[in-house]
Image 1: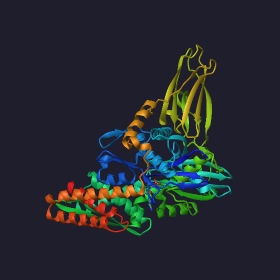
Image 2: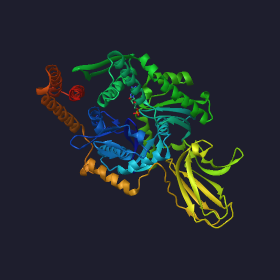
Image 3: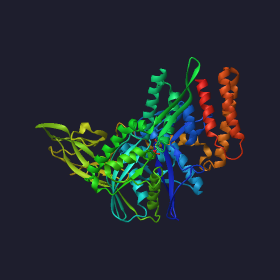
Image 4: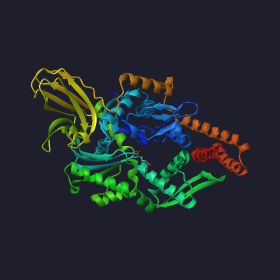
Length: 583
Ligand code: AMP
């Protein structure tokens, strides 16, 4: 039997885990009938950790105890505060990964210790490294990091044999990538990638929220942008309206008890037409189409060279996106593989290949960035010390390694500083410095002593830089110390212990929540809401008490109804009301 390696799509909004077994790809359910885990974590009032749906529900009530969209912070040397404690982006991501690991273990009845994790093609070295660290903190060896569009192409590829050039258009919650991929026989080759780490369906939600805020200001002179709870609720309403607008010409942004003025509750009910909505999001879609053309020219191709468009990411369900792509490229986008799941499926296929499962596709990936160093050279007739020397160029297939010879600038120079940059600008200072190190103890020699610098970019897109004095073989072991702090082994261990604690000591043995306990948990939460609302009754005004009683009754009815009645709408309504009354 092959070893178990799962494929994980660690998304900004949602995450999924998949596996290949007996030649079939399965996206593992996180609960009955649900294969998507919201990428949200939270700490409940009793201190227990919430991941996924439960954390998303809590986010509305307690944004200060919850964290969402952490992927946007990956690779930054920063912390987020959750329930009064600070966590690194790696630790928050690790909580999501750890939950996915549990879910996979419960499903497979076996330990899962290895994973292939996907990242946007545009993730930098530091962001990839942070993703790897998150895996380690979660107790997963990250055997490979692959680009999301590449994974998607793998998922679509199965079953086809003809050579073709494919545009993978991936618009998720928070990131956008477009890649030109050539598929021929067993080889999937990414020719070029372009994108924006800060563009996605969340921006569409925010555009709708701004629209609603303007409406509230214009019609009722209400300013809500500084009220975090109301904003969190508006965001939820906006996302619901956005999703409805993908299949309906109109949607209504509804939030009851959004705020109050002079003791009178203010409800929001704003109808938005698809046309209005499309106007709001057009600037974002324009930006994605510009990126499509940049990716095409990066691959040295024209629109006519494309054979197919593959859609990836939940936000590609937006009809305007499909229409604009068809208009611009003259091809109808393919979408038969679920755009939410195809990245995880592709990751699982890659995992299957590594584990030795029967799947023939070979993967060739490219670097989305140029990496290089700086050297003293002539510029505009003058000596300039920061001329950029690219070693690994953007869109080079990886893994790759390239060396370049440099010379010392003056006699008896004892040390040389090697700076490592990421970027395209001929002036190194306009690129991002991602690290630097010294090679010291050079031999006494006239200027021109040869130093060989080698850049090695592995299959995961992680960069290693080495420098060697040619004559003596003196080499410097290199640590890239840059503005973006990396985790030391010790720090990883500490983070892992912290997360173990949050998950509870018996976490390894504890199966993922089965449906029964999820249902039970929801019922307990519903009961707690009712009790809380009842405690508020004595001090509520007559009008508020009537509203409370209405909501309590509805939830009670749902709780006592026979069969599997969805408690969520009634719970949400009561939670919203409690929030409003407590605010
Ligand atoms: P992903 O990161 O791929 O999971 O995509 C998540 C994004 O897709 C979020 O912004 C969702 O709100 C959005 N999304 C999901 N379903 C739809 C839909 N039917 N129409 C428009 N956007 C959607």
